[in-house]
Length: 388
Ligand code: MLT
Image 1: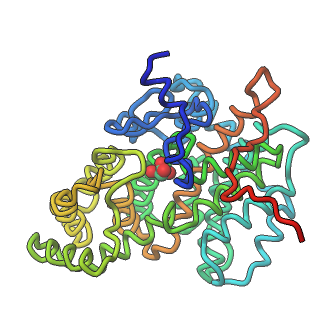
Image 2 (image 1 turned 135 degrees about the vertical axis):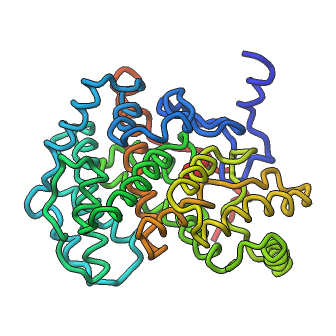
């Protein structure tokens, strides 16, 4: 091990109370994040994967190899064959009052509710079932929470997971195609991001205590729901709407005024990345393809040009570049999903896949013994022993 590598394992006082930022705690086989080239799934740069079917990327994350044509068909068939949600498994979810609570709460409750149909001590089986049930859970969430009642069409898993979701929402022809185009790539781009992002870490930590897959993934969704993590994609679309112009000078004035008022500039910077997020670059190309003249997309295009320069004036900002959230909300909006409060549920749907693959890997590690229960150390602020 080189001196540089060794220093990776040295814990210093300056590491404390920093949210474990950058401290190595484990190994991850599904993906790694390069600060410049972004996330790679099983070694493949994300930009090479954006046009694959989501089911193929499920295969990749679980098997660490891209599927052959036969394997691709087998994964699609496997998921389709499991797609019927067992009777009664959504009772708890169905009892939430319409329209109340954040959609991420619904997602988490829905996943917990599905735990009623847990398999006997088979985490891979639970994982594949949950992935197969997600399109219908998502469609029911959108319809019921939105006050639109039952799904518009019965589940038809032969349409693929995204096609089936779009169909259950009742979308037709061109609208359905555009939604499918945008959502397929959204899912692929968001499935995994190494092991240390908050939702993945939280899900794996809960799973390490041998909690069920459903409880672990629901915990991950709760972690994802925070505005500093997954809910940033909702905030970002709201921010883009607030900018309200695509004129460079006006955008620059707006950004400077936000900074002066100490308000956040959404869609830029990242905990690990030090260049533009390749997922943002891919989504910019999709925007140029599906909605080049859309006013919101024009705002995004200008923000991407202006903000890195303005933020770059502050030498303490290590990455002033666009991240995945800058473009994703605008694409979803154009794809017919007009309510930003639902956007994090799409992120959640995608992460269910990556986090499940990571939990299965951790459960199979150490020759099948599984990863030990997570138990990091906290240093007492004060070790003085007091007496009553
Ligand atoms: C992401 O997808 O960018 C993350 O989940 C955030 C992170 O990596 O910390």
